[in-house]
Image (cartoon, rainbow, N blue to C red; front, top):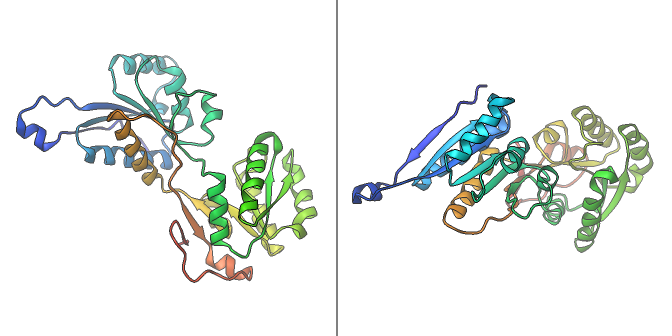
Length: 306
C-alpha cells in the first residue's frame, strides 16, 4: 500500500468570520513504515487534529527517504519551523529525536514499545507507548479470568527481569502468584514448559526477543491447550492463535489519543508519557474448552472477542 504525504488544513470558522489573521499550527507527522498499524494511527491522528481546528498536518513516510534524501528531509523539516513533530513507530522516533536538528520544537511519539530502549535515557522523550502498566495488565487478568491464580511468565531475564520483579510485586496485591519460567534461548522453551505445566494455571506471554516469534507463539499456545492451560497474549495474533485472553490495540484509536496529547502540547501544557488505550478480548470458545467459567458480564475494556 502506498502511503502518500497528506496535507490537511482546517481553519476555525469563527476566526475566519471575525477577520483575524489565522496562522495554523504546523505539525509534521513522521511514519516509520507503510504498514497497517502505523497508517491507521496516522489516519486517526490526522482526522482528530483536523476536527480540532487551527491545525495544518503534513505526514511523511520515512520509507520514501533513504541515505542523502533522509538527510535532506531532516534539513527541510528543521527549516520549515514546525510547531510540533510527531513520530509514529520506533524508526520515526529515532529519526525525530536523533536525526533532526530542531532545537526548541516539541516532540511526541506514538506506537513505540519500550521507548527508553529506542531513544535512550532522555527526560525530553514523551508520548504514548505500547507499554500497558504491569499493574493494569494483572488487574485485567484477575477480572477477565478470575479462576486463575498461578501465572507462569515465560521470559528471558536478560530482557525482562525488571518486568518479572514488578509483576511479582503487583501480583501479590491481587492474590496472584507469578511463576518465573526463565529461558535464555528458544531451545530452552520446550524443556522449561514441560517442567512447569503442573505449577501454573495460565501462561503469560509478553514482548521478549528471545521468546516471541509467530511459530513459537503458535507452538506454545498449542502445547498449553493440550495441557489445559490458558494463555495470555498481547495482540490480535495471539487471540486468533488460541489465547484465552489478549490485550488488543485499535491503532486508529491510539492515533486519536496521540492527537489529544498533541493539542495539549500546542496549548502550552507540559508533555508527558501516557499509557495507551487498549481492549481485553476474552476468547469464549477457548475458555469454555478449557473448562473455565465465563463471567456473566464484563466491564470495559474487557469484552468477549469477535
